[in-house]
Length: 426
Image (cartoon, rainbow, N blue to C red):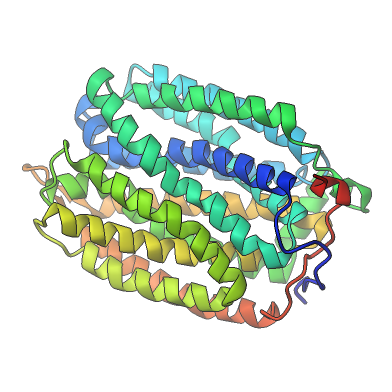
């Protein structure tokens, strides 16, 4: 049976420290997401700069995903044996160094290696963030928390991607990576100084053998269903990302000067809508919001991937609605999935989940690179095929999430385990 949450043990309004934790997790996600997201808009600049093909660019994107997935699996056995703050700082330091190497890369080969190093450390961070979220916040508040954390995705577009493109136009594609390094160092300092230890899980009995703990997690039937559905959510979505900027420029007719505007406007809209989706997830029901998001995603993907030359305003509207659908899937999905693992398996479960998502994303990038074709004029062909794959994967996730929803009733609103009171002190 699923680890069904109990009745609430904490207030349903955020304390000052909880708000601080949410802000830290959001900024942390901002740097991690930006590091991955920046590759997509840089594609139109990076491919000609390094004289690489769409397939090679897909390898650069997937290199991060595969190394991140591998490191996450290897770290899963140890994820529940340390203070999550210390674990977070260790992997975040490695992530910053890897990103620095990306910014200093003089060639395709060096960049590929740097992305592997970055992925080895960055791939574990997402799972630690999810574990901290689940440790410190009850089930009835996780939709709102994840809504704020996922807004980092929008913030990376509003601040990071347009600025990254601007810096690339001024000083080359290396500049955005140096920007990420600077922001990450500041975020890391705040985490080190102000975040309290997250070690409540260490007081509970857990498997001391790391390998056995990993194998047990991988063999638990209810966990396997969650692993599969979250991987499938990533598989479809990551197919569109790597070639989104090239498709927008070469197929939709949006020039490089206006490309940042597409990300800026859609990002601003999602920055405000993300927390609203999180609130709706907790109040209207996680399954209902997921159903809405999946339906909207299917509709907008079919429209977006079949567009030809399109006015800038319509491209912005379509992108904004597409992101609304994506957010309305991932936020309730993460909230529902967070109720499945026991407290002693939480770190391992989240590590495996995140790793499989990264691996699925890497596979998606390679598959996408082998499907799409860049013509002599620069146009991206067969992009609509990627959309059809995303539609099919979304339909499958609908059936699986419905089953998970039935095991985690919406009327159950508590935490899967009470968070230590010290974690929430003002």
